[in-house]
Image (cartoon, rainbow over all chains, first blue to last red):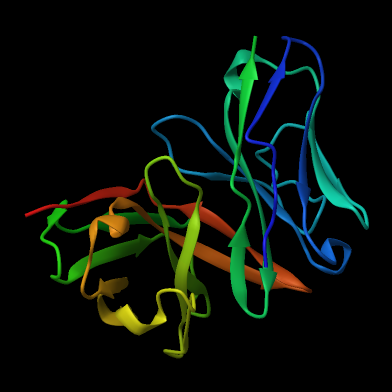
Length: 105
Length: 120
């Protein structure tokens, strides 16, 4: 099973960034999203498709459709630069997407 | 607040065994799942396996033949052993708590990670 993400996404400061994650039957799975900044550990951004841990700003949101899971970052800031990973389970194996490098230019 | 900290040798020789330990502290109740993951240079995150408090383990099929995850509740630690390492096993290794609900589960919090180099 594979999850496919674009290798990179660029966005201007203050604009909205969208990162996609595609995989078979993704709508039947719970998708999580993680942010990893350079030199830091991954941080859970989204779980169960769209839920945010309390420490995560409302600027981060996500949804899942039949086609793909989408992470949306509103009012993007330079502090949002880093790698973003989607993750789901398939047959009791945790699968991660290849990661998307977000550049705020 | 659960906190995790990885420890272990940063350098392992090819064909030898990698051994890492994750120390857990904070507000957990002993019915959690704990996991090991890794981030090879230039690649994405990879799940290695997880451990439930009962001792039940699950492993990534791609690594299952070489990996053992075990726990020591008396020390609030769980460990990873990976045999016959090669350069492909060089990575930053993370331990994390796993929470399962509904159709899946999520990882968090994570330890700070420990870098493992494979070289003679």
